[in-house]
Length: 378
Image (tube, rainbow, N blue to C red; front, side):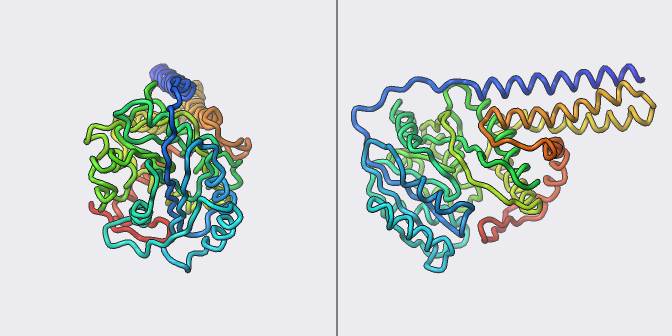
């Protein structure tokens, strides 16, 4: 029995190594060469804002500092005048000196997320030939918008381009570690593997996305995502059904995150698990589920080996748990994430071990997001 447990430990360890190499290769794929268009069309960037994000002023400034060769209009969309982020946005827009405006969308109707409602309000006012939507907690680099438009105009069937997000701030709390590893060590590499060399996916991760207007119209407009919690991913599915491609480029989009409590991280983890259930196809998520199963098998193997007094098998099983966590940390670093201190790396191994409890919490049909509560259909 000790020999059998040792063999199982070696199989699980090999599984960790194989999947680590698969994801590492996916991250390392180069951006395909694209020829710049003869003329860059005008573009409107709609940025829904609710609340005061971490580093809000830096986020707003980054959204306005762009090297895009064409005309850029930026609209910051708030619910109303009471939003705590409004004074910061007004100060940044006033200092920028043109090309940006602040508008109000009012409260969303039932069955529509606040973000989608703000996007629809901004779309009605947008003047650009292309339209983009960006989250308020992101900090795009000056050349990112140009790279997204280059990819959008590279082929006539591309309806939307988007950028993968990366948490670049060094984590300060355990919640920060969990958030960074989830985004940069799990979801980012997983989506990169699914996208392949072409970058084409049947969904969108919508922290910053650029659309052709005709593609949005063919998909049924932004309102096609009414009733959806994962509205940006659902928009990608509508575009895909309408015959347009969604392309993820390689250039990352920095997202600001600091001071996340463990409780808040668990709420974010639950929300992303919900996203994965409804918004991301199984072909993109099944490797992550397999890795989670392997982590739990390693725990079961460790318990069995200790019960039988099989020291070698127990060491192998413990090695699998450690290797799984170290793989996530290294993928996070390779993806561009900030450095994680050694004394906080243990939380990487806990990510998969927490998953069953997070899945069980989905039985509660409600999710809180940006100060709003959404009731979910079962």
